[in-house]
Length: 102
Image 1 (cartoon, one colour):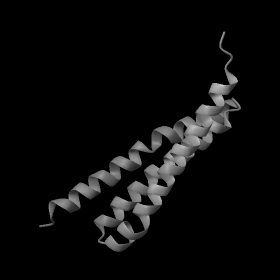
Image 2 (cartoon, one colour):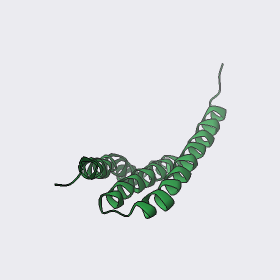
Image 3 (cartoon, helix red, strand yellow):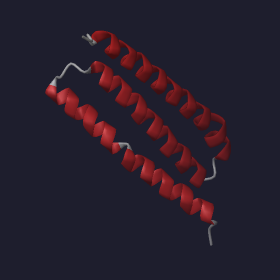
């Protein structure tokens, strides 16, 4: 019998891949409408990248590639998440400047 950690990682990887479908749908929908929302696309794609890296991280943990998962994918996901946060911060800062308060 396999240890419970195997099943937890498998379920988590499937959940991450399913969760990534929602932002991908929004990106595809915004591209179809030509709303000129490039910043939304960039932020969403960074978020999708983070989610996908987390899914691959858990999938590699299932197959026993602990060194690759912990040594490469975990730091990479942290970098992508920080890049997502900085991009979001820059976008919201620019949006606040564009509003004119009375």
